[in-house]
Length: 151
Image 1 (tube, rainbow, N blue to C red):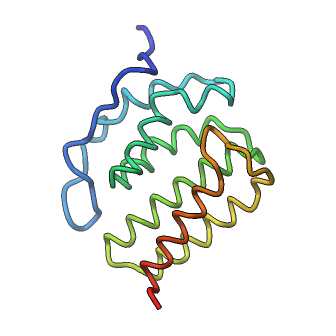
Image 2 (image 1 turned 180 degrees about the vertical axis):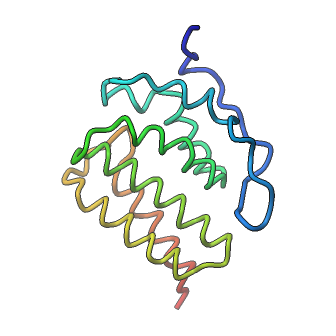
């Protein structure tokens, strides 16, 4: 069976899942997207996979649970103690923080913002990692913090 085309359009879920508020997607809904990841894929190629692209599109579109679901598969392909692993983990926790806001759990969102920053602190360069600039992720965290504590 051929692998999916990493440049193929990203399927959008029928709704953004928010635990406790609506129904979860079928267990296999993201399998096709996750299958774009091959074991041993070079780190430089991760950002071009359908799974990574879907994660970023979902994050920007407000599909936070879905973002976590597909980026976790990317994270599993990254070696420990690498900037790529830290960046993917930061993006996953950013999605989680935004999901907690939708779930009316501001303290959990604040704790997750701290976790995002901890992961970004381990990215010692300001250069893009997997095509994402650490400063852009920090700016998103700051925006969330302002939302959580507008004073």
